[in-house]
Amino acid sequence: MAGIKAPKKPMTTTDAARIQSAQAKAGNDVGKRSFPARAQSAAQNNVNKATGGAGAGSTPKAATGKPASGTSNKKK
Image 1 (tube, rainbow, N blue to C red):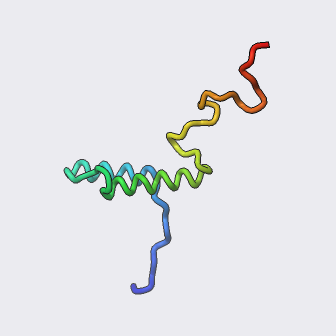
Image 2: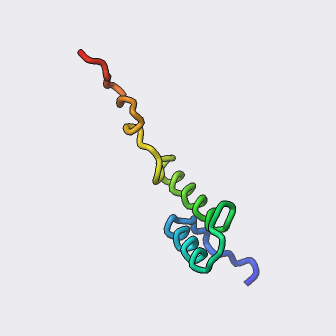
Image 3: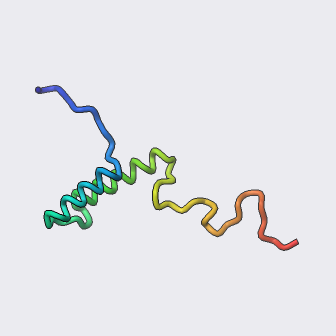
């Protein structure tokens, strides 16, 4: 089996949730720097890359309190 590698599969948020759940049920640490925390971070990085930086939990441009381009808050 030497030299045979499994295909690379990016970590998904579902994978990270499964890992975190299993570790928590087993009574293991799921805090900062734990494997579940690193898995969650990797999954979120993959989501951000796939969506151009607008992953789950990010603030949409229109929700920042600034007017959309081409509009104004000034009264006429």
